[in-house]
Image (tube, rainbow, N blue to C red):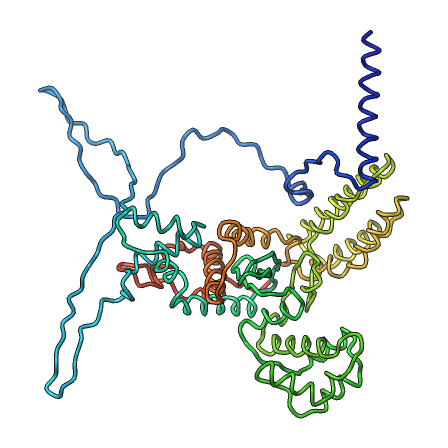
Length: 511
């Protein structure tokens, strides 16, 4: 009887698997497959094992508050004849949240010549809300990821008379200095960094779908939201606020790489003017040369414009020798381009298999890639020309192999075509092997999007991008965002924080 039940259970399992396979082949919705949040796990799996801890600590360790500690003696009722043995410290940290209102009685004087002199307001007072309140609002909204209605409710509950409209103005009005500082941080990063990691995600602005692009590395983060995520848009972001178009060797090299015809390039090079102030001047120049009348592939106006923007990027000394690391999205393929190994291996991991031979081939290839990835991580720590040659040969052996699984073989051939970009680390060991830092950076933007949907005005969009980027940059530089905002808003007794682009330039150390 037990044997019969075992056979029935086995047959039921087979029938269930066959039903799922039939549903999948018919395009029907089957039972959901629960996958881990990180499909690859390659980077974690190639980490060296951590040494075992001797003994788990029972205590959290010494607490060092960032504020001055006030001592207060607590007396005890003791019987007569007791001996005093000193004090036993007990540290308590607390927070005081209260609203204050100050009415400044400003003196007014009239000089003998009829001029009126009005006493100036104290430093940091700009409007009817003080610097401490403005700092708290910016901190809670951008780094605390609060919503405007909840922030307004909280402020009212502690005694601040403020409307949602006034709160919105605190978040977006007169924030040009912060937006400019975020732009300067981007310029500093593009000028000095040996590499930048990039990524993008969906964004909502002015009732339309758009895209937010992240640019950053270990020292800075910058966000830019636009309506497109084309290569021309990415190149425009790399100009970091400049609007000029430049024809130079970098521009002509870009045009040749992207198949712009030699006669058209020669016609551009023959003209005496090589710099154009804005888009209108550049398009007028192309129109005079007849580019706009051509109906060919690739579009000569697009390629020439991309080349002129890339020439502008190079003319401002941005990304002159830096590596651009991406997840293989086409718009990021500019300059010295490197690819993320985690995204490359994920293609093999997510490949559909149908037979035991397919699954065995997939497992074997993944193991080879993981071992190779571990070798690349070791190479970054101790690079050598001899080891680089050996790793290039090993790459060919892995990605030119024939497994008998046709789909897998085609994927390996496709990955082999990206050999130069996947092996950029052999020439530039400072380049990371993955874009995990970009995905971590952009997570705060995704959270903001989920909490508050999108923005309506261009000013609100720029403020959101600037403050999220500045907060991330402060974290990477080891600067408390609270202290940074206090310095910029001139809160009484604030810590002096220099412009963040100075810290970004100071963090760069040549390889």
